[in-house]
Image (cartoon, rainbow, N blue to C red; front, side):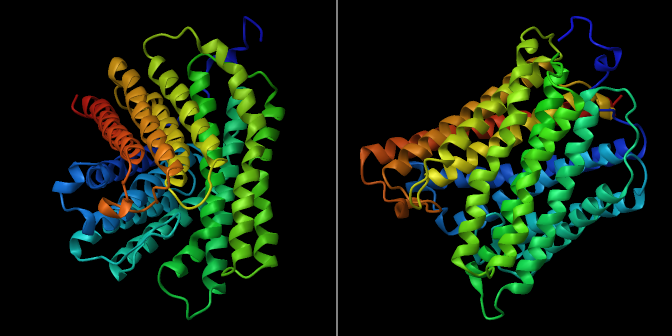
Length: 459
């Protein structure tokens, strides 16, 4: 790249407009942070219930699956979709504000119901994939309310005309396209959910019902998360001094390529009944091989990274989060190709991938806070935090992968794990230690983010 880039490239990767876009983004970010705080409380119980020695003295088994359901839904579903709300609010400008505020209000109400449902008597946890549920009217109502808010958010993003970018540069044009492409994949996921609901036999109940209900839409939504992950990586790379190594048209085409496997969802739904083994298998293959379509975009990002070697103090948090995110997402992807059978290698895979996305969103949060009207995060803590959280999660998933190699089953706790050998105990001990370190890292993120928000608000 030229040593003297065009002036447009000195601008932020993406504009943060004052007024409605910024206020809505702050609202969705606040909702996501609240969900992380609540999920953290449940995660403490989860880790303790599976850690050797400790599990013998703390009788958490009965609450384990209830806590696991709420923890997963808050820390993955609500957090990821709330951060999507942050990005989409910035992507579409001020038009359709009423829809935006309605979506946020419904999202907040649904999240509150989900978090409080266990304390209001909601039980009967069902450990289906993607969106585990408490099969109780109150919890399901919370999911429905949040889902309605998310649907409004997606519709607003797709129907509101995008502001003109002019000559801002390759990053801005491509990022806006990627964010709207992510909204389109989310809309397809919602349509897939409706299709599944209509197609599942009326007499199917329990975990099997929800497994098939969320299977197709859950797989499609992973492409939404991946596109927004790419957005966060590009945004942070730019913030650390990277410059495009391809043209804006090429970068846009690479984002389109990353989204394109979602189009195969239609023939999958047309080809087999939703409640069939073939339907499940085809979506598994779509995720396994469709994810390869992201590699060209990832390669472009990686080739831009050498320019980030020299950064100032304010850029270090974003760079730390960027590199930690790349490491964890890569580890999760590799483990995905090592899955054999139903054991804890499976959660090792998706924990790595999920944490990779989470770290990217954390780092972008640090970068966006001053632009959203808050103070800058404490540089030292914000730089250390991604490595504490990412390092703990890496130890966590390596422990799970190790234990999975010795046959420890997933979604079990206490004596049900069958820790009858030193290898299994060591692996799950690594898992527990890594999980506790990651909890500290997650707590640090909340402290740093809320600290920056509080300092600005208290002036």
